[in-house]
Length: 320
Image 1: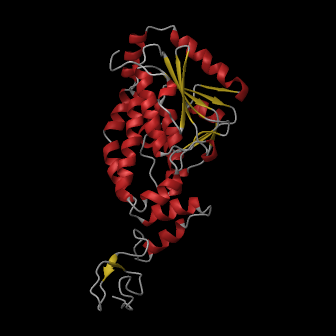
Image 2 (image 1 turned 180 degrees about the horizontal axis):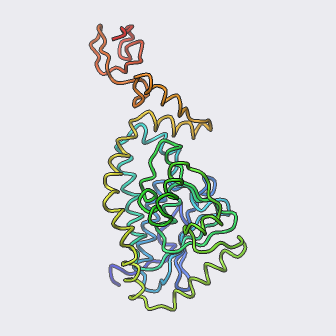
Image 3 (image 1 turned 60 degrees about the horizontal axis):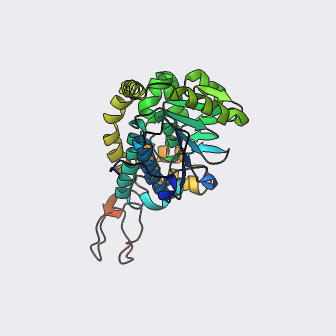
C-alpha cells in the first residue's frame, strides 16, 4: 500500500456530502437539501477530501458534482452561518475562505474531467462551483443567478473572475450587478452550460458524457485540462488572495450586517436607507456610526457615535 492508495467512500464517514465511486466515475453530492444544498464549512472540508481521493484514484476517469434532490444544485454558502458567526468574528471568515479556496483549487486541479450535474437552483457560490467544473448539464427547470450585492457580499470566489471569460463582459456585469435569474435555455445560449435536458433525462445525459470521456487517453486529457485552465487560473490566482482579505475585513461593515440578517429574517434589506445615510454625510460603514465618543465619567473610548449612553457605565453621552 502506498500513501496515495485510494479509499472506499464509506471509510470517510462524510456527513454533509455523499461520495460514490462506480464504473470509473466518482460522484460528489452536496447533501443538505433542507438548506437548498448550501455548503457548510464541514461540506467544504468533505468536498476537498473527496476531490483529493478522486484525483488520486487511478480507476476514476470522470468526476461528477451535484446536489441532493431536485430543487437545488447548490445555493452557495450557508448565510445563517455567515450571519451568526462571521459578522461577529470576521477573522474566522478568513479561515472559512481558506476552506472554500482549497476546495476550488483541488477541483480545478483534479487532473480529470469534471461535470456539473445541475439538478436545481444554481445560486451564488453554487454557480462558482458550476463554473469550476469543465462541463455542465442542466435540467430544464434550472435557474442560475449571482446574489452577492443583494446580500452584502461580493461574488469574488470565482464569479467576478470567470463570468467575463465564459459569458462575455456585458453579460457578466448584468449577472453580477442585477442578481437576476437566468433560465436554463438562456444559460445554454450564454455558454454557462453545455446541455439542457428534461429532469428525467439528466442522469442519462451525464452518463453518456462520462462514457465518452472514458474513451480518451487519460494523460492527454489531463494536460488538455491543465492548458484550458489557463485563463481561469490566471484570473483566480491574481485576485483570490486579495478577495479573501477584503471580504474578511468587510464583515465589519454595516452592509454585511444588514444584508445577511435581512436574508435570515426574510425581509427586504434597507438598501436605500444606507445610501441616504452616506448622502447626508453620515457614516454608512458602521452599524451605529464610527467609534468616536468617549465617556466623560468612566473614560471608555471608541463608543459608537450614535450611542446615547455609555455601554460600560450607563452615563449619558454628549453629542460630540
